[in-house]
Amino acid sequence: MSAWIDTLMVALMLANLALLCSSRLRMLVRVVAVQGLVLGILPVLAEDGNVTVRMALLVVASIGLRGVVFPILLLRTLRQANVRREVEPYVGYTLSMLFGVVAFGASLWIDSRLPLTGQAFSSLAVPVAIFTMLVGLFLIISRKKAVSQVLGYLVLENGIYILGVSLVLEVPLLVELGVLLDAFVAVFVMGIATYHISREFDHIDVDQLDSLKG
Image 1 (cartoon, one colour):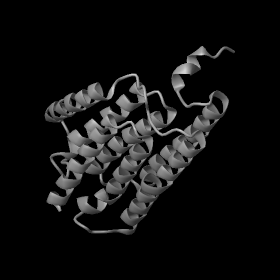
Image 2: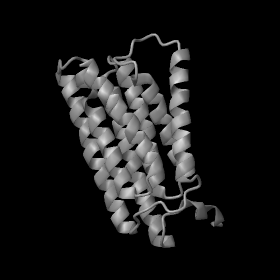
Image 3: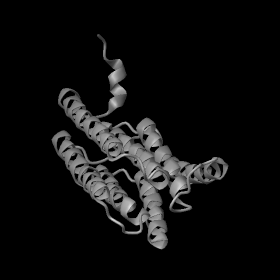
């Protein structure tokens, strides 16, 4: 199983790089959906295929929300707002890719310095988790489109999930489902906010919101 997990970790790393270098919002939503599907099967691989009722519930909830529900909500928002691309981000795509390379190197360095009490199921799990969180934060602060920032939030949550699954498999199911519910509520609220932004301003660029006056 370790070879499969390492392969999935590499796939997640490449997905993060794809999020940094593409301007096509629909493709970005699909990449995040693929991340959600991968994260859904991680607990099964981490336990060498020993599926329990608790794990089955977690897998179904994770794949259902991250891989299906969130992408459907975001794609619907894109259709309603009639936007396809992130044309002029705060940080260009070449610099974004450079950030990705530097961030992954920094993630490897941080992993080598962390005094972790648990043993991850893969040597790549912790650096990929840190890298995913850094990419999520970067998307939030470097993109103008509200949908891109929502995707950044989801990627950040994905990184936290990878770290949690890789180190603390005994976390109660209620806590894990609570995190998923928090992410669902956040995406739902942000989707509504994005829709209203597009209806009032004919775009979903958040850089114009600072010009509003009470």
